[in-house]
Length: 169
Image (cartoon, rainbow, N blue to C red):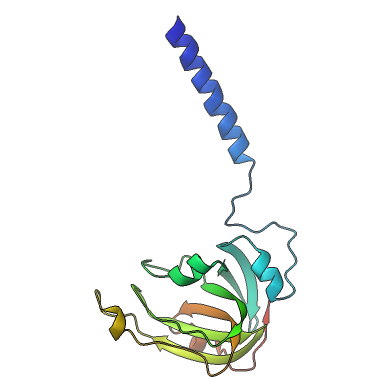
């Protein structure tokens, strides 16, 4: 009888937990009423949130990374992006160095200052597996940026993205 009581209690706890968890918004999704007007708003989103952005009239669903650990990890080790792109939000404008450590697919880099495209690096090749870190090339924009959009290689060409284009959130 005691075992049946414990089993019933366990089932009840599990059911209550399931209901409570199902009503929670996953951290990977921003609140529906989040208005994004500038880079500071992007920094306030939960890390790895997904947002929609427009570039050259094309809507893109992007994963936002804004923590140090996520920016360092980037897309390393993934077999695919998992969205239309990954948007790196830097805490301040600077000339960052990006590399393709442990990347499994080629990328285009779109370098932005606020919402304006200021530089583009296309068709960056993924390195051969087990390439030593000191053999990995570094990629950087020609001036300070605070956003970096990584897209599958060929996307810049396919969408006609050009320097001076404006991104909208």
